[in-house]
Image (cartoon, rainbow, N blue to C red; front, side, top):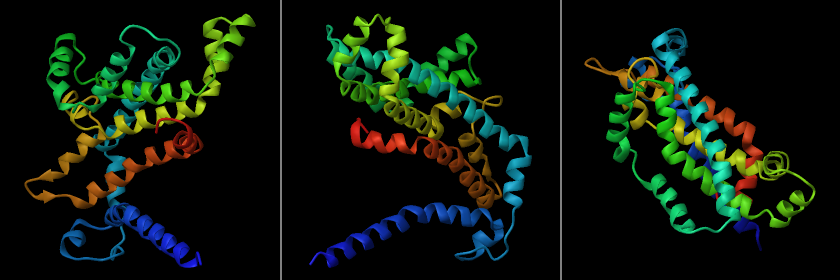
Length: 270
């Protein structure tokens, strides 16, 4: 009786997997082709397999420096975001104060607002204090939408922890910093992993702020990839190789936090 329904679900799942992975496969497929092969024909596999596109990116400082710059400011942003969001989320989950709901909603509105709205203020501020074209400039700018996201996720996890645990720790003589670091954070480590993952991904793929606030020294790979457009046309092969390499850091992060992400979807606000 249930066999046809099971088969339909299986076919739908297979169709979805193929649909989701097809763009990634096609980009990797293009990365092993020459630019001439890409623009002149259609093939499921490279007819003239080549590593030249990856060799160009991994040996040209103007290319691989973009990956280094991106990883530096994304790591800084993720660490600061989680560090700031943990005590903020604890305050929202444990205490009631005047305007707490309004402040929490205001935090979320920062995440909803397009980055272009804050572009000019950031540009003028950083130009005045000398932070333009630095990794710290981009990392601090991305806090605007990553901290609210981290607070929202962590607050959901913290609200699921009974308040009796806090009270018991205080009775046992734990100071708040000791209790928070040694007892409370391990209880919500799944939430920390989920929040760190989303902070990393949103900062990694953001283009507008990262491109505008940097020029040479801290230029990210997302901005460098736009230089494949020239008067001679689009360098599709190199662009595909660069795109394939941008997937690697995200895939590595997903691998390390995969168990936390699964718990996050089951328990927290994900």
